[in-house]
Image (cartoon, rainbow, N blue to C red; front, side):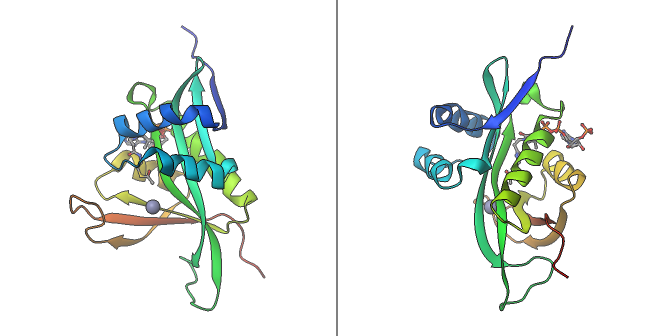
Length: 166
Ligand code: ACO
Ligand code: ZN
C-alpha cells in the first residue's frame, strides 16, 4: 500500500477545535480554547498543522519572546526567541516523520519572525520528544525542578537558529 501524503501548512481559525482535541488526547498539558486562539492571532505564521487525507493529525504552536540568550546569557543583551509551546502528533501517525516536519516548519517560521534561538521545556521522562529535539539540533540547557503540576522536572532545551553576529 502506498504511504499517504502529508500536507503541512499554517493553521487557520477553523482548525482550532481539532488542534485542541489533539492536544487533549496527546498531552497532560492542556490549555483553554482562547489560549490557542490568542497564539494563532498573535503569531499566525508560527502555528502549523499537518494533515493526512484532509484530517489534521498533528500541530506545533509557537510564540515569540524576548529574553536572555541560552548560549550567551547577559542581562544587557536580550534576544528574540521562538518558544515551542506545544507539539503533538496523533498516536496512529507517529514515527512517520511528521513531528520532524512540523518542527522544521516551526523553526523556519520563528526565524522569519526574527528569532535567534528556539527554546522549549519537555518532561525529563519524555524520551520520544527529547530524541526528536536532539535530532533537530536542540541541546539540554538546564533542568527545571518541579516544573510540571505533578512535580516532574523539565529540561529546558535550546537551539540556535541564526549564526551569531560577528
Ligand atoms: N522513541 C524514541 N525516539 C523517538 C520516538 C520514540 N517513540 N518517537 C520519535 N522519536 C525520535 C526519533 O529519533 C525519530 O527519528 P526516527 O523515526 O528516524 O528514529 C525522531 O524523533 C523523529 O520522529 P517523528 O516521526 O518525526 O516524530 P513523531 O511524528 O512521532 O512525533 C512527538 C514526535 C511529537 C514527540 C510525538 O511522539 C507526540 O505527539 N508525543 C506526545 C506529545 C508530546 O510529548 N509532545 C511533546 C511535548 S514537549 C512540548 O510540546 C514543548
Ligand atoms: Zn514552554
